[in-house]
Length: 331
Image 1 (cartoon, rainbow, N blue to C red):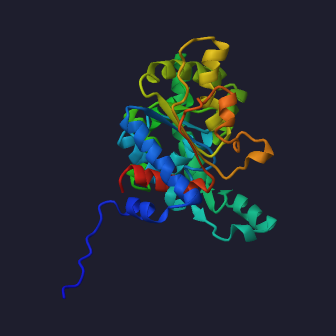
Image 2 (cartoon, helix red, strand yellow):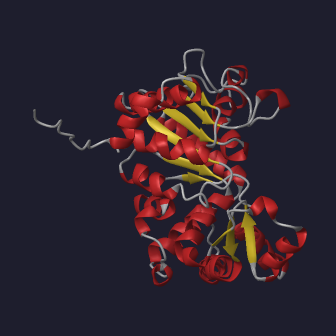
Image 3 (tube, one colour):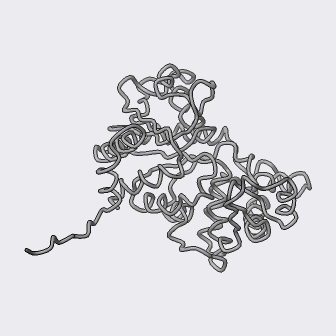
């Protein structure tokens, strides 16, 4: 009797998920991934929103490929996610992992500070190689625009820095694993609400306080919303635009509000609702936070329709998001 031949699958991750993820949050993950696929297959576009520290969690490994394969049309993210993907690109070998971070004493934390490390859970970002290395190059781009009286959005300055090639000398990971580099090469639109709440935002503020730059050199969050309204009007025809929300917070709430703003505040007619919705979150609804609001609550705010496909995966986004992306990418 011949031994049974095992053939290697071309889609091992997808096959594993379909075989094992059958109930509860695991099944919700599969439903959300299939809904995402259906939305794209029917001609829809997708916005992905990034809260928390997803860039430092190295979501770029999977998100960059999603960008290259046109699985995402637009991104909304915090200022931290905007900069931390690039920091990982140029300073990865200098990062320090602290797996036993729960056991750190105040003195241990102080010593990390004295050694110029900033801790994000189990990962310490090196100040000199990450923050200051970016500061040196982004300052030149900000200053050039400031002196010419030009104004750009925060992500546009980052794109200029990446496309210039000036950072290539520092690359410490496979550049294919940087979602910001992939986005810059495709020039896909990014919205960065609350950019001021980031290291680069703090650094930019310091130049204003020192009288070296004008605040107006950086386009504002209000201007992002005005720009987004125009983008949404031009891209929401047909199947419409879906909303894939990783975490909660301002990265999600700011862009989703463009729909009610247009038809309630501007009183525009025929504004399509978001046509797909998924949130990966570990927040619960009972605390009253936006991050924990269930999808149906968004119907009352005029963000989603009764019939919008809605999914919520109540789990850790650092585990769930790469799996959903791998599923969609047929990995």
